[in-house]
Length: 247
Image (cartoon, rainbow, N blue to C red; front, side):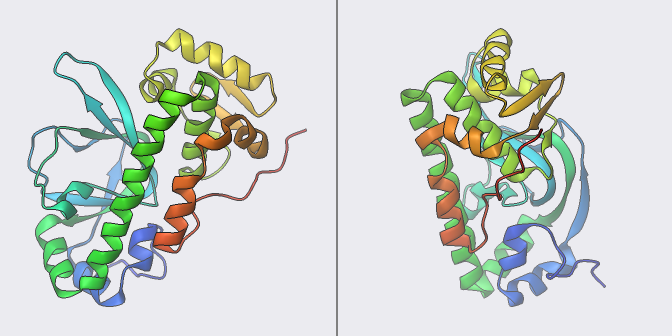
């Protein structure tokens, strides 16, 4: 008997998956511990299972042939790793690994394909999820090309805040430099700028969100559209309620 129940799972996609599809996947579900740096998808390696993240934060990283790398997507409880299999791609040149530890529910790709073939409405849902990830990438490109560094940093902090429970975000300078494609020294400077607005409190390996509304003001137009589309297409609000302002 499976230990997973659709009413109590924390992953948004599993929660809203058509019940028939969830029942088909149930016997194949396994709970996986997701420590920091655990690889969820390796470049060029056939993907044998997907993971519906329950807790934690995974990064999708694009890397060039000469070793330049930048984060191009986040995956938290709103999503799944290995989403390229939904587009009939058995592997990807991108890498996915955990940046914030947590846990997730794994399902073999073979079982997922059977469930989606039998329940077309489930495939429709997951393809809509793919659309939201495409928008996330598109708006990352837009932010990189049209917004200042501190605005881009505010956007990434908000995206992490959406996906990580609580106001303390265990984000290292190494992670932030990967997100923004800048050196660690540049990250420190930009964190100080945002910290000066009292929107956050940055310490080693942690960012405490003090005032989410202020963070959204700093990010401006580079945050919000993909989040609104996720709610429209998936039916669950990704954006969190504003936090209380710290004294």
